[in-house]
Length: 256
Length: 242
Image (cartoon, rainbow over all chains, first blue to last red; front, side, top):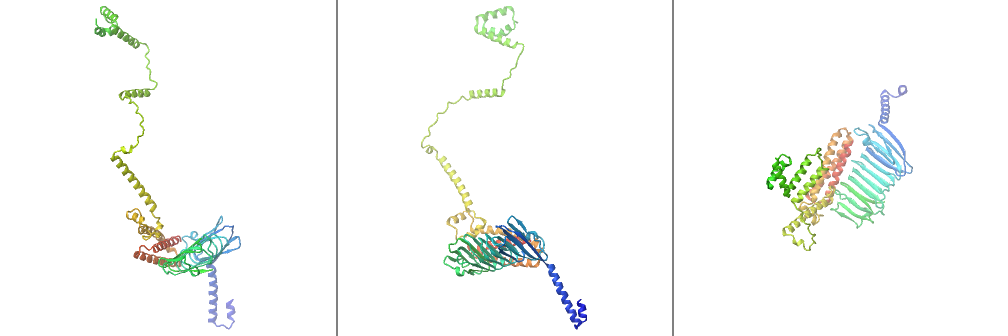
């Protein structure tokens, strides 16, 4: 078809050849892209107390709370395609890509998962970013074995744990009475944005940089120990426990 | 005839084998001698019993029990029963009647037993859990703990730390061997990410070890060393499952 068009036109042979090659390349790119990426999608009905447990190998995981009694899992799967086999086990939705793809080389799997607001969320990955937002439940846990950022926004949970190797951790949420909050990084920046009305016992340790910024939360009850490598004490009546450790990075507290 | 002669001839007389003259002499003697006549009667009874037509051997009803009874009787006769001892009233101050050696032995025994019990109790109470060394240092040790450490009843913070490090290194070696087996199937990006993370962890381990060499009582560095070694172990374990 293109040959017919160009044969009668005013284009020279070299221009025509270049254009045809470009078109071929563009089409092949689309074909390759279509073959390289797959899409996975599945929805599960969810009860009142559902827990999502995801263990990914590489890729970004985004979990959002929504106002529907169902869990929606959408994943874009890069080649070589990983096997994704979610299991729904009496209130637990489990996706374990490490177990299901052991001994195989797989490409990144990027998840976007929507869960009811009150779901417990427990997500892990070996490499990649984790994001959780709009979750109000008993548990939010995000763990990266090696590198990747963790961003937890609009979280209201009694137990929160975020842990990574290389990468930043951002927590923007509430500190509940009697709750336990742990943030651990090997190298990166840990930023906690919490309400000024929070009350907690704090152990914040940055042994390498000694850079712990309490911001508005600085008070006489919080004291430096170990030559400034750690800040420990209480803010408010100290009913919750906040433990922050950054081996080779900074720690910052910000008022919400 | 006298008694001796009579006794000598009596059994032949009973068998009617004496001459008439001798038998008459024996009969005469038996009429005048009570003792010999009684002996003759006894002998006559025995001979009658022996000459009965059916001899029944009656077994004792329980031969074992019979032998026991016989044995008991023999023993009783051999050791005549002692008269029962009168019950003695407990006398006051009996303790003071013990000899010095007895008292000293008892005190020594009690001391040994209580020492052993104390030693066991102290060792059990003070044996730190493996993850406890991070909160212990010579600075936080009480005098009692120092004393126990000196006599070997309690591990020092350094010993506890070394024991913990040994455990962690053993676990790290195990997981590292598994990682080495599998890392050739990882893609390049995974290998690079793993190596980057391991490098940062190893830098931290090195830093804390240096600090602890200079200041073994630095609790915080001890705690952080423990934490990074745990991180290293977890990293190796997680990637070994790929």
